[in-house]
Amino acid sequence: MDNLTAVTEFLLMEFSDIQELLHVGLFLLVYLAVLVGNLLIMMVIILDQHLHLPIYFFLKNLSFLDSCCISVMVPKSIHSSLACSTSISYLGCVAQVYLFFAFASAELDFLTVKSYDCYLDICQPCNKLVVILFFLILGLFAALGQVAKTSSSKNLLITLAYTVLLPFLNPIIYNLRNKEIKTAV
Image (cartoon, rainbow, N blue to C red):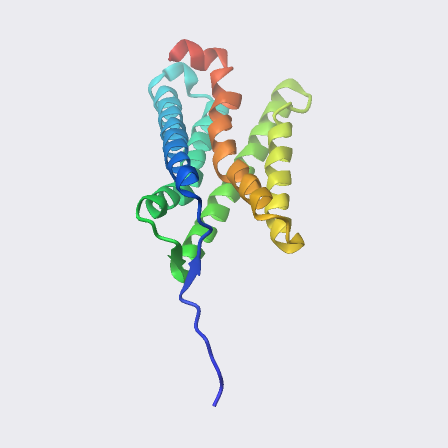
């Protein structure tokens, strides 16, 4: 007779009560800011005829992917905190990982194409390649942090930067500094 153990759920790291309240409030605020900012950018690009250019097509899709990327992790995190749940099902975890990497990969593809488009337009590398590099470095640290057995607080900071900070900063970096977007808003 074989001894088999089936994994049906994973345990999540808990926060202290003060951290829990801060976590819910801060995550909810950042999540809503990302959604509102990205929806505003998408609506402006869709409704303004002057913004129906290839560069804005990429920006609109980048905003959509940012909204999708942050929507994979943050709502479940907020729900788990409010419900005092410390576990996630195996299938739920697999779905989150798959969707996050699918959206992040698509976002990386759009960033690459957008950078190449900028390169072709101005015949020099786009300075937004820094964001791609930041995106890749954070992903690398997030993946290697588990392998290197770094402290849980460092892992948490890297994960937060990767899943929350980048989608929060992308609308600011790509759109709010853009004169045409400012004019349309």
